[in-house]
Image 1 (cartoon, one colour):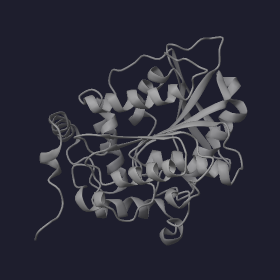
Image 2 (cartoon, one colour):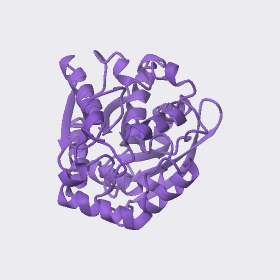
Image 3 (spheres, helix red, strand yellow):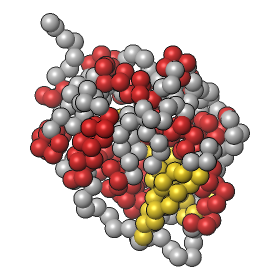
Length: 332
């Protein structure tokens, strides 16, 4: 049977090939969705442990909880960069991890969040939102919004400027970042304290695209059946939920009052056109948006700074965008 799919494993760059070989050594078929979410989570933890070693040392980290709107506790971790002053409050970046809404945690993204704090000079607040399928849409979204609202109201208790909060996230976390901003703006009627969004290879609502037709497979856990699996886990009523602007973010009003966005994609990611479309929609309506496509890499490449130059560049460039939006605060 023929396939129009691109030969991604041949097209990716040499470093990305080495990363995939290392992933296979660490956890075998780490991204298979046919083994059940408990096994998926354990494999994900095992595979990410290597990638989280090393990296910047923080001035301090602090684990805490924030109360969600339904009274449940949301674990969070505060990362204070070595540039932090004891006397001056800092901007904060709420980091929302990826993992298809099903896997991932504060710990699986620890090196990314430390690097982001180091490169931006901001306090990074990483969120352990409730995972699916146990928590259905919009539970994870509500948890992320609740953390942002808490930082806005009580940030000064944590050395954070309460009116200078940003979102950052990768993959499903990029979707939750943008959705949280839209929810604050449209449901809570105040997103003025959200200053920047750093959105790495997110899913924003396209149902079909060139990228979907060409890319995705066992190497990234994003073939068509995988993506259906994640949505089935996440959605309570898939047909209804996929109409929500807080899941299908491209259906939201993107013509006005959107915080400046840095949007990054991977060249051989089936979700690449979601990022391209989001950027173009923002750009054509006069919103501040910077788009960058990282060559020779696949989805979730941000984890691999130990072996992949493009991952380091993506974090550096996102941090640079953040600093340019914060000219009143010179982090570096």
